[in-house]
Length: 225
Ligand SMILES: Cc1cc2nc3c(=O)[nH]c(=O)nc-3n(C[C@H](O)[C@H](O)[C@H](O)COP(=O)(O)O)c2cc1C
Image 1 (cartoon, rainbow, N blue to C red):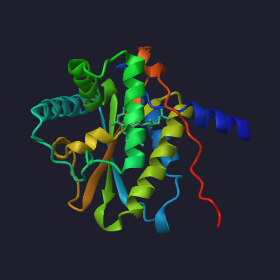
Image 2: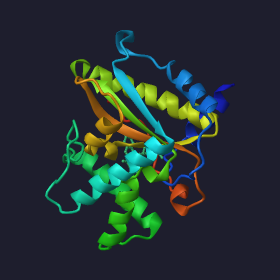
Image 3: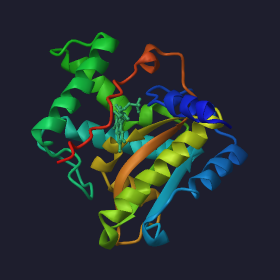
């Protein structure tokens, strides 16, 4: 692989938000997980754990997230039990980007700002991991934060790039970290490991949502003194 191949692979990965139900073959999943082990890690601690759900387990999780999502519609934070405050207000500069990406996605989907029903339907699909056949959950060791979160991110991007190279699409889904109990129903999670994000793996459908592309801004560089 030359540099151009890598650039093409990195550019080709994007967040997919509608998946076919087709399962990912086990040998492909194993290849992706092996590639993910090549990510660097703080003192080689790799203070994170991964949960992967496919088949019936993924469907049970999806159903549990759907129920959890519906409870949040009351607006009083009912049922929200995540380890981190995923829904906290961002600092202004980041909030501007958060709003911009949301607006751009809804515009792409033709959803009006006032159309609460359509927005809610999209948010529910988000909570249901966009129908992906494989749902991943990432847990970080609390005592190793912030380094464990950084390591988990490095691992995740390596995993996503390997997935893309193997023809598998992905979407990180921080929204799944709004709820902790669905994960506990399906996996033995050690007490000191906290759910930081979920993600989806599978094969993109040809739905219009998958033509959406986020703006790729240049890396913000500090001005030298
Ligand atoms: C940790 C993390 C959590 C994310 N959670 C969500 C999510 O819940 N829903 C969603 O649609 N996109 C989610 N995204 C995807 C981002 O919106 C996306 O990565 C960004 O807009 C850049 O687009 P790209 O991934 O297509 O390049 C998440 C991304 C990251 C890194």
